[in-house]
Each structure stands twice: as C-alpha cells, then as structure tokens.
Length: 123
Image 1 (cartoon, rainbow, N blue to C red):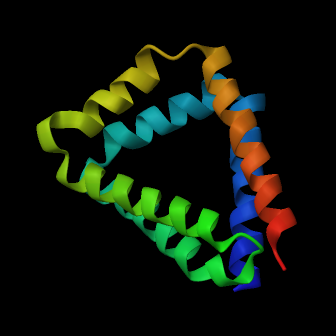
Image 2 (image 1 turned 90 degrees about the horizontal axis):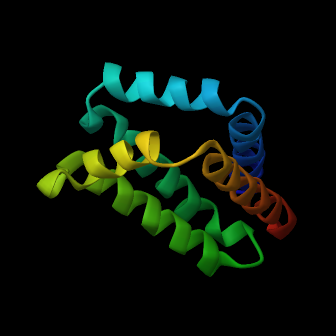
C-alpha cells in the first residue's frame, strides 16, 4: 500500500512539474491524446487512478482525503465514459481553449502541492 502511495505522489509531482516547465508542449500532448483516442478509452485512466487512491488510503495519515480523491477520480472516469450532454467534451474544450498558460501553471502548482502532501502523509 505504501508503495502505491509513494508512486502516486512521485507521479503527481513529475507530471505536474512538466505542466509547469513545458506548459505548451504538455497541453499539446494532452490535446493530441484526446483527439487520437475516444474519451471512452481515456476514461480508464482516472478510473484506475481512483482505484489506486482507494486501495492506498489505509497507508496514509489522512485516509479520508485519499478516499475522496479516489471517488472523485472514479466519478470523472464515469463522466468521461458516459459523457452525458457532452459535459466532458465541453470541459476539455474549455481547458484547452479558454484557460491561459498562467492558469495551466496554477493547476501544475496545485498538483505539485498535492503530490508533496501525499508523500508527507505516507505512514
């Protein structure tokens, strides 16, 4: 369980560091990924991450935070898979077209803070 929590923390820090340092390239990569594969295939990623958060919740100091993040991630996966009224499509369109580079870097900073918190909460 601890190994999964450490991997989630380090992966979060690494991924969101790329979003801060290489904002345009990272956003372009995600945009190309979403154009190449249908959202039903991509929906598996947040669902699996949500399951990993739920599984590793017992190995951290604040398991309710991990379980909440896990449930939100699974919810996002279900939303991406079903896409009722094109909600997921509109969210991704908003992210890629309306959010400025500073906003995307802010998401990166929040992700790095979350990854650091994850690493510090492992018991």
